[in-house]
Amino acid sequence: MMNRIAYISILILWGCNSLIEKTAPLEGEFYIQDGWLAFSSAKYEEADKHFNTAIETNDSGSVFHFLSLVGLGWTNIYKAQAIEETSSNGLVKNAGEIFDVALNIMLNINIGEITLDLHEDYFNGESHMYAGLALQRGYYAKQKAANGIVWETSNVTLSDSVRILYEESVEFSEHLESDFIFQHDVKLNFNDILILRTENYLILGNIVEAILSYGQIDFDQLGFEVNEGCIQGVDASTLVECLCLVSHNGTCPFGD
Image (cartoon, rainbow, N blue to C red; front, side):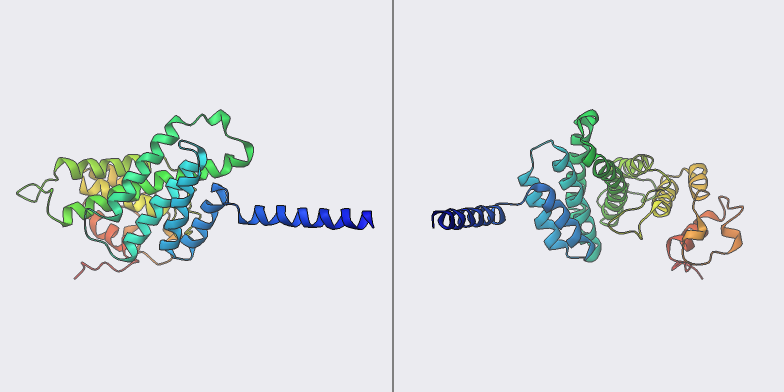
């Protein structure tokens, strides 16, 4: 009889402990995972909540804090794309501020202290951050220019603030390796970064660097055919048209 009571008591105690574990808040790592799951399903509002909870849950300046910010930055960019945001004071601006905080944390993280199980996540997060910064800076520069608030009176030369954004986009893109793939949207890869970099150089008036960047594009990965003239021998006279074709799936909207 006593054994049975003891056995039942253990079962009850185990059950209570299990209930406590299930109702306790999740660790920050799981909120990050849930955030990316929602992101990959284009549930950006849900992803936003998960990443914000992860930011609140994790220690400030930690690797998980850094990864949470990277996820939230990307969520802001994709939300902006989904609604075709044109305002220069919205989600894209927010994404830049979020990525800037992530960059500051990354610069102060001691790499030697990162545990083995976090090693891959951290370095994926680093490449995703730089890709996000490159896209955000280019996107934000276009928003500001389109709103007409930072162009010179002649509308020929770029204002300093827009020029800096394009230059920063180029700078951040150079931190990425040629095998870069955004693992949460595999359609986005290094080719897209090269196209963005080429556009930025062209807008900045650096034709030589634009041609060099264009020449690195892997045309076999584009998923559509590009005429031979836009694969070999591109020069200053043909770059704009060829880049337009490459940027718009082989059909330039500004053609004849």
